[in-house]
Length: 281
Image 1 (spheres, one colour):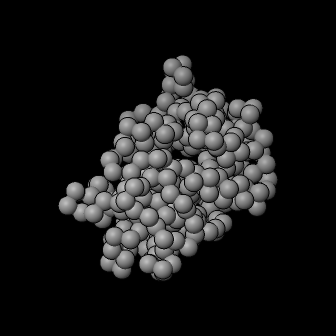
Image 2 (cartoon, rainbow, N blue to C red; image 1 turned 135 degrees about the vertical axis):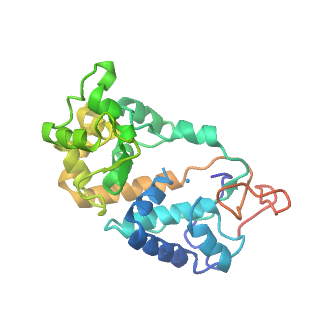
């Protein structure tokens, strides 16, 4: 995402009034075809978005990939049983890949809560935001690669993470033995196709899939929010909406454009839209 812009929900109303319905329609088809893809799109707000092609047919050069990701992430939550909300739109896409910057922002599955708190704090996101946004792991799966160290060599001890509940650890050992193809995937919670608060119930029970998940319960500063959200789904839903809105408000002050292909920046033969030369009305 690039270019600090004035964001508002109705920005595409005059130019592409069906933008949000197009995005939701594509997401509905994706949910039927491959449920895991919907969860993967949601992670983008926190990779090319397949919605871009459908929007380019109807509204060429009008809707940014950054905005598509925001809409698709919201729809991934709403279409799997979670809350729905109005998203603010009007972002521009960056003029360069920003791969290094993205890698610095994306948390590692090995992260502990202390590191995550510091990372989120850099973006003015609170401890509650951290725990609520981690709850987006309510849907989807992750690879064995992400948990091998937890199962067999936690913190270099040569032993499993003691925070894993024994029966759940046995299940993970069967899914991810030492000789496994580490691209094999496991569910992030007990209801991986439904957006609910089961994720937090699993953490309380010692059944968090990723280290970066279970650490939210073992760490004192984050535990109270895990416990709260595990008991009250409506409180979690409101907190995740607040967190997603705050996340969507994050912008930088760099020039931007509306990409014709979300995978790559426009070539210079295609009109670029910079802060100085472009104003959304």
